[in-house]
Image (cartoon, rainbow, N blue to C red; front, side):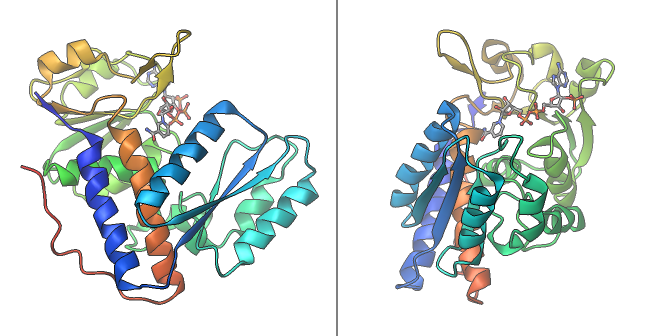
Length: 293
Ligand code: NAP
């Protein structure tokens, strides 16, 4: 079985970002990370982005507010970064506390700065298959892995398990765009095993540790594990039972070291694209993309 390591894909995306920064010397694409409160997972994600962005030649700035900040204070900071021409992308750590008016924020967010595809304009753009719409980074990361490892999507059956707005739903549109035949399963689907085990590509995004066993996987199918689950001992695992998956799949992503690694790289690529679109610059030639055999 081929292990689909995220690092190989992330490194290729890093190269594209460095090419942009090299070509447009003097333009420093900048991301604003907006966080309310101090949830450990948010802080860890933020730290990881800041560290990785240095390697990608990009800037990431923190905007932190205490959990008890008022909605007015939040909206004021948001307006500042949304209107600042030196900030090209915004990542809001969600979910926000309940007293923050997320709808108001989404309505005024500049879609060109919406790197995680949360505004209506980008959701609709992904439905339409627009080239310049931003998809949620995790959904995009799945497609980047499949493309990067040269795994055929056109004409293949794909089964996505999970229908969230962050992963399952946008991914169904991205895979349709690649001409896959897509089925989306969820907690009310009857007999997911029988659906998934007919698929050439299975994507697990349910948030339940090791739920997807070998019985969900057709011989030699490709398995993409989006899940990130942490047990009481602090051990990380995906939604798939890796020990069983390796016996059936032809290729699979590990956790950690799979989709998560590529998600941060996609965020960086989205920032570069956002800067390019906002500054009306042409695309950097990516015809030298190399695919992994
Ligand atoms: P979510 O919003 O909780 O959605 C989970 C989805 O899975 C829902 O559609 C739910 O169905 C479905 N589901 C739950 N249990 C199921 C079961 N036993 N059988 C079938 N379907 C089931 O989760 P999410 O935000 O999409 O995240 C999913 C996983 O991906 C989590 O582990 C999360 O940590 C991880 N994640 C990873 C990254 C990354 O960068 N790698 C990024 C985002 C999320 P219903 O709709 O019917 O409730």
